[in-house]
Amino acid sequence: MRDDGVLSKTLQHPRRSLGNRYRSQAEKFLRIKDDNGNNLSWAEQSAKQSVLYDFTNEENWKILIKIKVLRVDSEGARAVLADLFSVLGRDPELMMQLANQDIIGTCEGLLTAAFSTDPLDPDMWWKKIGEEPEEMEAFSERLKGLDVSDQRANVLFSRRLERVRSGGFEDIFLELTRVLLSQRPINHEAWEGLGVVYERREQYDEAWLCYDQAESVFPDSTARERFKQRMEAMVRGSDGVPWRVPSISDRATFLDRLGSLSKPKQEIEIEIIDEMQELGTFSKIDRLRREGKITEAFFLARRMAAEGTEGATEKVAELLQEMEK
Image (tube, rainbow, N blue to C red; front, side, top):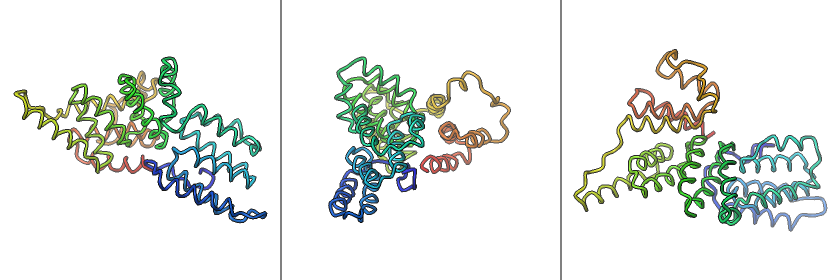
């Protein structure tokens, strides 16, 4: 959690089995605690680990907040809720309203209310909004304004969007997945999901570009290679013109479009610094990094790498490491 740094926000993807194991340990320590509260510290450490390994299981959060109540740790309970709000993409200002207040008596209720409104389980979430057109529209507008740069929030919402896609709302899926990736481009699952939809629509250049991005941020991804094999097999079975990898200019345009999504609207309309005045090959990238605009810097570096700019590949690697922190 933010109070002690135990729970890292660099967690890539949930691991349910480990989360369940640590939650079981926490429950065991709770059962054998004595009147002096011995074993509560062990229970808390195990509960923190359960959330670390699987932030998508509500039971892991519930046992952690329960232990905070037993330890009468109001500040710790507030940190748990703040961490959950980050995962849900909520405005951090909401937690400021609870600053300096004793929330021991209300924190469990606040947690339950958050889950009731915004279930972590994507299937439960889909049941709430999937059959209500107005709910889908509200979700779409809300996501466009959320901060989902937290890796866990990005994973959570990308899995929700998979339900949106399988529910038949492909256009909404495409639009909102691009929003997710503009804030957190190292989500390889989202890149691959986007590629699948483009491929099904026979927009093969866009599909390849998405699979290529997935591999660039997650080298173990085989999506691009499998796509090439499918395309080769399709051409062998027909008299059609062989498909070719998109040109460098097409890749640059694709990355520019995503990079522009990561900019606030006012910055798109009025560029404070004229790009022609930038000095040096990577001066704009360096400026964006200094300003904390890592995502914009990443897409610019990827474009330069696609264009063959010397040293750009190393810049991409540096920015990937920076985004994973």
